[in-house]
Length: 443
Ligand code: GDP
Ligand code: IMO
Ligand code: MG
Image 1 (cartoon, rainbow, N blue to C red):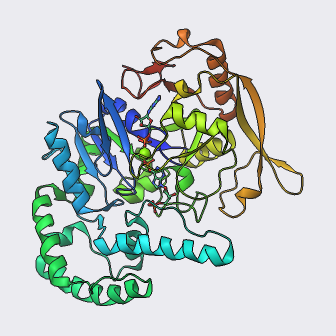
Image 2: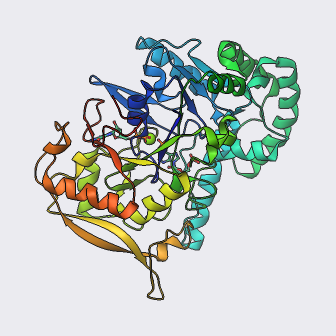
Image 3: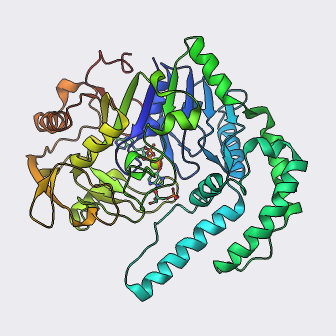
């Protein structure tokens, strides 16, 4: 049984926790998109791990973790992550494979990313409108842009061939220096010799991990071994299907799996859609159910809603089921995991958005995947009663407060999907299995 785990909102839904839980039922865990912009948290027995590039399955022994060809890899960050895991006695060796076709995030990509954001927000001063995206400044957009542009990109396999790397960097540095200059970056010209030296050295360190992962995956499929695909970022940040241009630069929906791993979609047997019991977003972009006052603060503080990668406070608001239902449709979700339900304890009333009102007065239950048009939509809410009880120690669905059960049932009704799992705290153990017969949550 091959499973995909994917975020249905704007990221940070708790994918890391679910991937870690599902790892025991799979043999290989594969990242297919994004890069070090992701921050996936796994908490095991009080120990907290934050994974950025390495699949969350790495914490389980005897599993093969793969960074697929669709990921953009920052080798420096990857080596740091490997070291920090080893420092905590998590073995990282042949259990981690990196596609030789994954594109490399270079230092100049991070400079470009930050500089473009600076230029865009400075331009906002004159126009009164901020056009910056609020990126993680991890060089993601510029690295994917180079991939699509072709002529200036470097792939992980290239790091193993210093002669070829040097020749590429000679051309790239000449062009990139001028581009950085145009963006107002005051740095000395890029030095191809220095970059070749440092990236070839990192390539040498990563050599044991770099391979043709497409064959590894297809051999696994043939042998009947099971694969868990770990989505990074989330469906509403998908470059094609998210709130463009306030998105990331990859196909983070499950539609990115075939291209980002080389495994055809027909091998994906089930898709677990991860959703928070409310909504959060980091960075710029529309968020119809955002609560900028007391309610938002209460959610942020109870949910500790601060970014795993950048530490930025996350914007918080009510659950938007128009958005979740849309993402579930795009991703082919077969069951839902509803995360952070514990955060909603103590609210007298809870709101769920089930439709949008448009400027002409019409009402729609369709999402508007467009960064400039979505702000015109006003959420239409249903109000449900809250529950005062803390539920962080609940592991049995029958022990959930009646109003919490009603909240979950309403989610199932509106989305038309079963909730197979409810999370009531960050730890592996703080999990309520709703349907023990659903494949993937059977243990
Ligand atoms: P991801 O990017 O989707 O893996 O999610 P993040 O790790 O960025 O953010 C989710 C945060 O919520 C992390 O700090 C988790 O430890 C935490 N978390 C996950 N599930 C729960 C839950 O059910 N309740 C609470 N209170 N925290 C949770
Ligand atoms: P995980 O996997 C939340 C957001 C950024 C920004 C936009 C573009 O932890 O859920 P980028 O650096 O990718 O060019 O930024 O996308 N973003 C995320 N937000 N969680 C993530 O990943 C994100 N990855 C990107 O905040 O708004
Ligand atoms: Mg995250």
